[in-house]
Amino acid sequence: MSPASTGASTAMDAAAPVPASDTPDSRMAPGGPGYRRMSFALFLSGVATFALLYSTQALLPLISDGFGVSASDASWTVAAATGGLALFVIPMSALSERFGRRTVMTASLAVAVTVGLLVPFAPSLGALVVLRAVQGAALAGLPASAQAYLAEEVRPRALVTAIGLFVAGNSVGGMSGRVITGWVAQEWGWRVAVGVIGLVAVGCAVAFRLLLPAPRHFKAGSLHPRRLLGTVRDHLANPLLRRLYAIGALFMTVFGGVYTVIGYRLTEEPFSLPQGIVGSIFLVYLVGTVSASTAGRLVGRLGRRGALYLGGGTTAAGLLLSLADSLPLVLLGLVLITAGFFAGHAVASSAVSKTAAHGRAQASALYQSAYYIGSSAGSTVGALAFHASGWAGTVGVGLLAILGVVTLTVLGTVAARRTLLANAH
Image 1 (tube, one colour):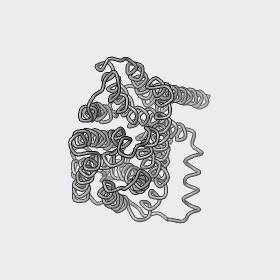
Image 2 (spheres, one colour; image 1 turned 120 degrees about the vertical axis):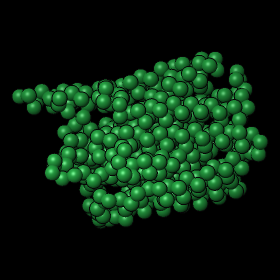
Image 3 (tube, one colour; image 1 turned 90 degrees about the vertical axis):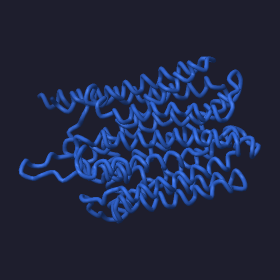
Image 4 (cartoon, helix red, strand yellow; image 1 turned 60 degrees about the vertical axis):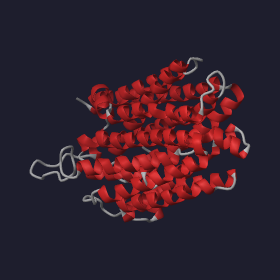
């Protein structure tokens, strides 16, 4: 079957060559040595990353009250962290090319958890935003380096599943961080809540460093700026990568907007839920854990583009359901939004790792940069839309983003068919 018909690309095939039959493949595979340790270590790094990155998101109503600011002002505590990550992910990926994936990931987690222990003592909203930006910049060393590590150390056929497990760790981190902060904040306030998340992240960081196997296939690259810029230009010149970057940003625009604003909606009329219950709403992240970890099977059945259509359609259905003033329907909407988002993100991010024939850390970094720019934009624009038009405004922003996902996927389908017809002639 041709690459076009399966949703893959010839670049993907070139990026992950199958070893010759007389040369054993020493990369990790499910059931093989080190695979479970590696999977659990990266799962924990994903938990720490998302728990820290979004530690203030479920607490925004309390932060608004504590500092006497609006929802859009408080949303900067989320946007600053994701924006810092977006700005620094490419430089951090370059460091990982030179000094190694494990080294950069370890250093990034160490700095991020240290800042996390300082966040509870922020004396003002401005100081809190600055600390969150530094924390996001530190966490930039995790996502791109992790995907590059997996692309180098895991066999190609297991790559989507391995990245899906890493993304699943993100969902568990996002869920546990919000649930824990919700209940802790209800009793002791938002400062104690984010401090608890910092301590949880310390434990994850220590376990990650002890468990992650040393890389066996890493080859140090150069930090020369011209070479780095050349690699970035090569990736941006690839139409498939450009579409995947945009798709990741658009999916995250939806997710960032929805989960930044949902706390305000649920604490207001007609729901008027207490902070602990609002935090528990984020248990729906478990749905994302499942959908991300099964992304490999989804691509196997539907192809990459089919999986993206399904993810986008599921997310759109969830947005529409969430408009109801019925708590069960809102929860069902959040379940669908979460499932669709994490499936789409896992599919798009793994496709980036497979597509890049060289400079995988930079390819993944560009995806992560676009992804977190989408998160910052979603957090800010979603909050502004909520302030102007209520929850319907936030949903409208999300539906426009999903329309963009579908449009880009259609363009990819058309491009693949043209390539197939050209090759046939």
